[in-house]
Image (cartoon, rainbow over all chains, first blue to last red; front, side):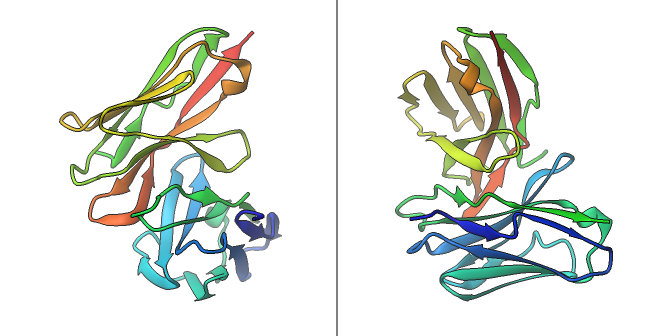
Length: 115
Length: 111
């Protein structure tokens, strides 16, 4: 398996633009997580899905952020409109359910810069 | 109290040294505990799970103290390649899929 695949790896956008981050989890994994990492706040969980259903989105900072998982092999995180304070590395991760393993496998991340 | 708290470091140690990292967590209902490693500008990767009885993997030893809500990681005979940030991870009690990451402890091993 190629692991968790994220795209794009880097994104530079202007304030006010819409940004869409994409993630393909490891096949067979039933949990998918979106994290954001900054120097100040570390790794923060934004939202996670179980079997394509959003379970906990309490970490989503505000209504400008939305996430979808239309099927087991694809998820998006959208920011509209983007702001400079959204600049961060966004990681997607996937894992098998708790009763087998909760090791989370991370993608390489998307480094977002909003100018 | 933060959900997962770690000493940010940095810990600067010579090769061959033994170094210990500590972590405390606030939710007594948490049941799963891990140490992840993150290299500079890379994604976090699982280093080891932490079990109640303590566990060892080569030069690495992890321990859990549920009563004190405290987790530790010991690295013996440190190598240059151990230089990284070590993240303490705890599942959110009552929400097994929700992993809470500490901000990490930075380790730099010098020749």
